[in-house]
Length: 245
Image 1 (cartoon, helix red, strand yellow):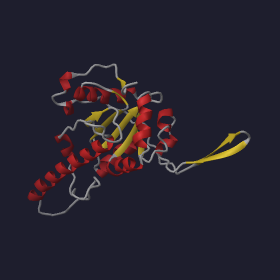
Image 2 (cartoon, helix red, strand yellow):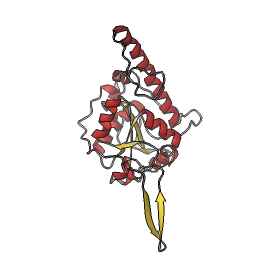
Image 3 (spheres, rainbow, N blue to C red):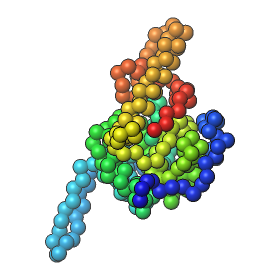
Image 4 (tube, helix red, strand yellow):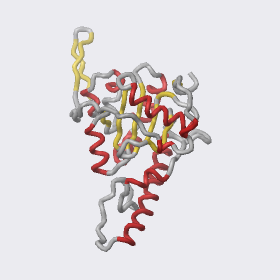
């Protein structure tokens, strides 16, 4: 295989000029799940019990999907698709990172091994985004909505699908597989994350200056992005840019 598994849907060129104007159908969330503590599992092997302990265990450990369970021990604060994640994104005013794939997807496994098991990348994701992992075989309706956006803005699509959303679930950047670090002229996943954070901080800072000039209270809101230059978040700033990998 030479690249991510490709979608069979053709790109919708009419959305390229203004992809954020695309209105998705109603996306019904799954019931909220909760974080599972670290666990040790005992397995029988040759008549003896072997114990396997995991350094990290996240909410996906309580899911039934084989694909989601494959990510249950990533050093990423994963949420399943559902109301718990949506409310947290709105409360903390953080962008959402949505990762979509399926259990037999080769490049999904590659990205999981290269990026989602990486401690540094896991910390960047968990500190600055609400991270949602989705099995496209469980929710093909959600997959179709965001694949349409990726195809419209990049001219192609496939899995794993990586999409960044506003707290209102509106996409503002999307792609497929990213290598963990830069490869020649191709930006790595870590670089993409840092560029998005920098862009959000820049637009938040501009919004902060504009609001400060109109406000007399001088009250500062706690930043939602983990960056010292960010002072007052404004959700509308997510709509001001589209960064392409």
